[in-house]
Length: 308
Image (cartoon, rainbow, N blue to C red; front, side, top):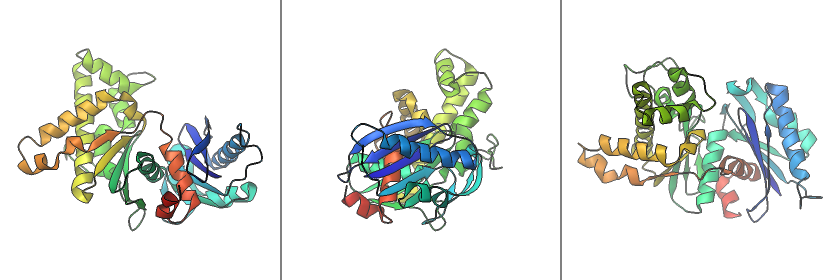
């Protein structure tokens, strides 16, 4: 039995995966703040899984963890996971002795890309575009996760698409993330609410001019990210995931409209049929936790996929 954990800024999603690749159990719990609390969250998640019906006496052969921040290829040290209160943490060294199984660590978006690829059950190439607090992507080619030379492949959120656009946290202007990141949209909206991006969509539907600008900008940002991913890597499909995709067809329709508008004057862009090469990850999908389990099961993600 393999374990995969998606350690998020507010909650941790954990799954136990059978040797056949089936999810045998799934638990969720709040994520603690700071290095010690994150370590305890991982330990608690594995303990909760072991208590799930049907898992009594089961042994866990590997633990994979997807976590925000920078993780060098093959490393277990997490850097700059700022929304977890973690500046630097060797997660495997902290939890492996207590868990009694090898622990491998991967950036959460890259783990989600691998999981989304596995859930689709297809071959070929895919980009996973995560739309959450920020914007980032991961690539999978024929079952293999592509991390890049320094583990930063897919950081499309910091591609500037408008030099006169809003200031991004990275210091540039007009980054994709400044238009389409949930935190940036909420900050620019500036009105209280539990779900500010959804509030923006609702207000735009009601005719609010400021909300319309933000909603159009979000669609423009996501469409730009899709265009960059396809033009750079010519992937077969771009799968949209992350918290903002809870908006469903409202978001997807806006993005397809923006893609069509950007291609209206370009025969070349129209030939790429970008609006047909995007799809939404199903709501509630365990893609990130499943991908982490695959990372934990093997140093070679292709091997892990081939064996379930």
